[in-house]
Amino acid sequence: MDEKPEHKSESYLLSRDENSKKLKSAHSRRAFLKGIGAAGVTVPFAAAVARAARRSPDVLSDPNSPTLNIKNRRDQAFTNRLNAAADDHQLKAPPHPNNGDEATYPSGIANFTKGFAHNSFGEVDPAVYASYLAAVNTGKRQDFDALVMGGTEPLVDPQAGLAYDLETYDPSQLSIPPADNLNSPNLAAQMIELYWMALARDVPFSQYGTDPTIAAAASELNGLSTYVGPKISGDVTPQSIFRGFTASDVIGPYISQFYLQPFSYGAMPFIGYSTTLPGDFATEASTWLNVENGAPSPLAPENPDPQLRYLRDGRDMADYVHNDVLYQEYLNAALILIKMKAPLNSGNPYPPTLKSETGFITFGFPMAEVLLAEVVARALKNAWFEKWFVHRMARPEETAGLVHFTITGQKSYPLDPSVLNSKAAAAVFARNGTYFIPMSYPEGSPLHPSYPAAHAVIAGASATVLKWFFNDSFVIPHPVTTTDDGLEVVPYTGSDAGLMTVGGELNKLASNTGFGRMFAGIHWRKDVQEGMLLGEAVAISLLRDQAHLYNENYTGFTFTSFSGKQVTV
Image 1 (tube, helix red, strand yellow):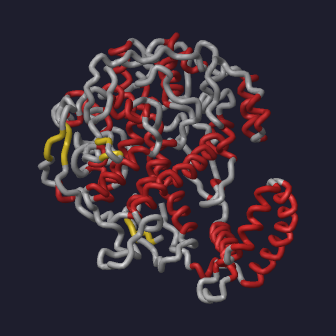
Image 2 (tube, helix red, strand yellow):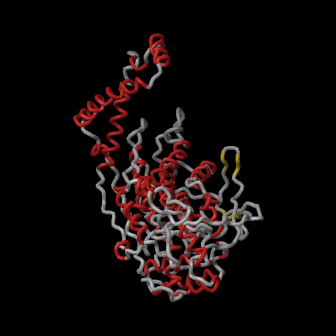
């Protein structure tokens, strides 16, 4: 993703005349609102305020404070907000192309239809599908409310994709490439990878170098010219398989240090993660169809072993991202960085040499912690806009149904032969007797479209905020890795231990989170990669908006983007 040049505030500030016009307009609105507001103030409260004003000096009119013009803050705050909005408005809305499959296959076989009624092959009811597309085209709440569902599970908040925000670019101003076409070898390669990830869920990451399933997966993926996962010296290897797209993803252990290092929530120390039992779901035609129709699913069996563990394999990762509080892994990362005394970005206006004051609400640790929640809210709106109103990409479980019915000869769908003839699909059939992708979750995917992955957009945004705030080139001290059983961590002594930086491990944290959803069988690789890049753009937009607001002499922070470029915000 190309980075946009750092905005120069002089280029984007409104002129004094423009501001004056807007302020006059605002004052006339305020006069109207003042009348409304007065009606909402109780008489005793208003009288108390008046009495207090007579007894106490008004600091806004204090003649002894000629420099700090507090009385002007209201207008200045308004101007700052206008300037931020004008800054954002400079970016023109780009095209938002989808892959065209909705027009190519009007039956909906290439697009998200989960939750509606389907026939025995998982093909959506045509009348319901037409109503669904009509609701998408109007965006009206009542049109979505009128949709007839196939089961008891509702669609997840399409309206959020059309919500506005007072910070960041509008979702219409950011864009991601089209998803891969149903009949493309690119999508087939992603389906093959997901089959292998499902087959390898219970292989400890520490055993990837010797496990036969991993070796078979690497061998098949190496033979796919359209496979875009990372390679080492031109090959998919146990060190690179099922990893993310940044250069740092292939350095060190599979799991990011920000899932493994110690931290505490105040007085509550981190003591490990709960995990789930081995076992897959929706591998039979009847249960798969129930899931696609939105029927309620049985709960996964409880793990009789309550022992907490560190994340050790794909199933643990899938279970973690099934239960996480969306931004918690990044808040954890911030707490880890604070605990390890990682240095802040060198541009921080409160350097360690300054003895008279320090950052706290601005440019201190609380700022970073709060920013994570702020950026996640904006990341989700962007994800939902793309999911519902641009792409409506099918989930892997839906596409795997097409694979199953095509290979078994019950139907013939336009799929690339590479997935139909793949060793991965054959291995899934040998295990389960069907070609449905084995799901980690009884309910399969959530009821919103696949592209982009919301977890990945959040990951990209949150990791970017932390790389901006901390010194992302700082080398992680004392890196660790998990044991095969996940019961403890041990020192990591690989030759690349000295290459594991804050920025690199935050990149890996973002990828781990997205790939946890892939291990679950509910997202495509492209969902994760493009989602992270979209999240990065959202975070940069938020940080640029907030740069208008500081009283400190903020000259910008520089960090390394996912693409490896230096970005200054």
